Length: 297
Image (cartoon, rainbow, N blue to C red; front, side):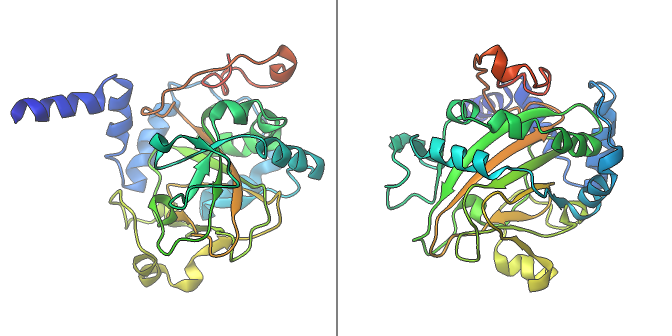
């Protein structure tokens, strides 16, 4: 039995990049995480972006944990991206063994269906959206260092289920010492479409620090119904969020939702196995090589 325990421990921290991931997850006190983040930033490349025009957005994100990005996505780019993903296959985020399927005909048990990283990166405008100058200026104003693109995701959320699954419950992300996520709706989202939900300022709240899923009842007992913001809007709605704050993807009731997400952090995510792809020089000439190094050769 002792041998099995040792093997389990080794498997969780090997390769050693996992050790850093699990170590930072032990720091759930927001103040301690800030101290550790500031120390980490001293060893990372500094941001060279001007933040003067973004000061209000940076402060809003710092204080409230989120900021809206108005007019980020031109309508024609949005349509091209939706068309692109309409021809790609998806996989159940929590049942990969079931294989890929057409997202218009998901298995009955599927709550959320993801597209592959390669399909996302080869899409018409993903790199442009991810590397938007204003977005990166705001993000790096919060991170305190040059951003690392550490996750890209696009997924469908489906109605037809009575109980939420995994991230459809409130939780904190603890992927790195400091990180910010970009959310872009690729479909119209109302109260029936599973709007993203967030508790403003909870990224600095000292409670709910155990890494687990929390029920609506638990969160509302602390913050009240009015203490939860539900992000609703037409397709193209975009916002940045510190998802160390309490959040969830609301379980859709009647309509499905398509969401684009990018995560910017100080470091690569220790549990992720990144496979950079080769794109043409014309596609990558305007993107920062350091920021995109995990995904683009």
